[in-house]
Length: 213
Length: 213
Ligand SMILES: NC(=O)c1ccc[n+]([C@@H]2O[C@H](COP(=O)([O-])OP(=O)(O)OC[C@H]3O[C@@H](n4cnc5c(N)ncnc54)[C@H](OP(=O)(O)O)[C@@H]3O)[C@@H](O)[C@H]2O)c1
Ligand SMILES: NC(=O)c1ccc[n+]([C@@H]2O[C@H](COP(=O)([O-])OP(=O)(O)OC[C@H]3O[C@@H](n4cnc5c(N)ncnc54)[C@H](OP(=O)(O)O)[C@@H]3O)[C@@H](O)[C@H]2O)c1
Image (cartoon, rainbow over all chains, first blue to last red):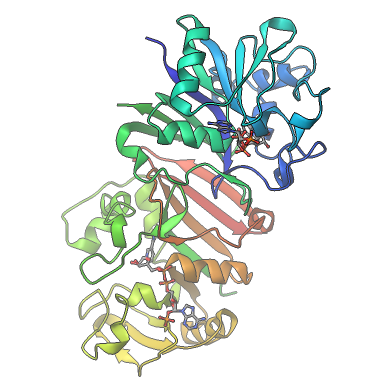
């Protein structure tokens, strides 16, 4: 059975998955890179940024789960580009010509574009659709594999709230961002639907994994 | 040198130190006892509620730090009683005739009362004063020992924001409360002033300790 999964969603202590003021120069707003430093320090993260090597402990093992068995991703418009990217016909996402998704990737936006076929197996499809309908389309495209909800926090929250997510991996980074895009809003008592595990690691982050009952 | 410390401040994943709807029947609002179950399962917590025994691991060791070397506590009006306790001349706090503080205990309120002398060394003093001034008074009363900021979240937040707290022990409980009294609001980038450690334990909570640099 195809599962719907969230991986490596990094939030601050106060629950923000990105800062305020997202722009071309500051994709994560005032959060900068701080939410993902733990990941870039792992072997998995190092390979993403072309660094030579990284750690191979629990952080790395958890980070690598992002890839395994995934047949499609769904992401929000604000993960795909800075505010207003829909007005820039040259925009092709943050990730260059070979994005690290390697599957059909569905971008939720109220101003959809025709598909963008990239190198390495990623095709961006643009969808104006609610969570359940988007998941149906993505699952079809995933060919029996799992669907990753790639974030940001607002799209993750919407899919969790709709009861559509089977596996949630959130990484709590010990910083206080104060403002930005919040993950937990509207998810009161969500723990009742999940088996929850929290494990801190030497890097200072806490891996929160929630598996649907 | 007398330090100012926070201990056992238990918050949900979304940062709430109490739920909404605090009342005589529900002191923690809709959170119920869930924020403190980890503590009542320890030897320290068991002794507070008259239970026979409890765990003796990291949760217990951390919980016991609440007591060591404390000469006074400062708490908020909403920790001392349900909304409106100031109108009930019989109210003497939640804890019976022998409260577990055993030191001068300063209750911040805009409607102060004369002091209440209880058994076991606790005297409640009522103060209408800003954080810095309240701390000065409490430190005087602590006779060279440390001052504990006893919560709730709103008073803890005010003292942290004012730069007055040296040691912060927050316990993150893996539940999502959705509403109530928030700890982190207004504390953006507070981690820069502290050495931060996050350690999860078998009970499922994560102990966050912040030591002022
Ligand atoms: N912390 C992490 O691990 C992590 C992971 C991924 C991304 N990020 C960062 O998080 C930020 C983006 O997150 P975010 O929470 O701000 O936004 P987001 O979830 O990426 O995107 C939200 C936007 O997607 C569009 N959208 C969402 N649902 C839709 C639907 N059902 N139908 C049509 N359009 C829909 C809307 O944009 P329009 O109305 O404009 O079309 C909405 O404003 C970026 O800074 C990104 O770099 C962080
Ligand atoms: N999670 C935990 O570990 C923990 C710890 C302790 C308590 N609690 C729970 O948390 C809740 C209380 O927390 P809370 O955040 O709602 O409130 P709180 O911090 O206990 O109290 C806030 C109130 O204290 C008074 N106050 C604060 N600063 C003042 C000042 N400088 N001068 C004068 N008065 C001042 C004001 O009340 P008035 O204007 O009404 O006088 C204010 O509304 C209770 O449910 C309690 O059981 C939880």
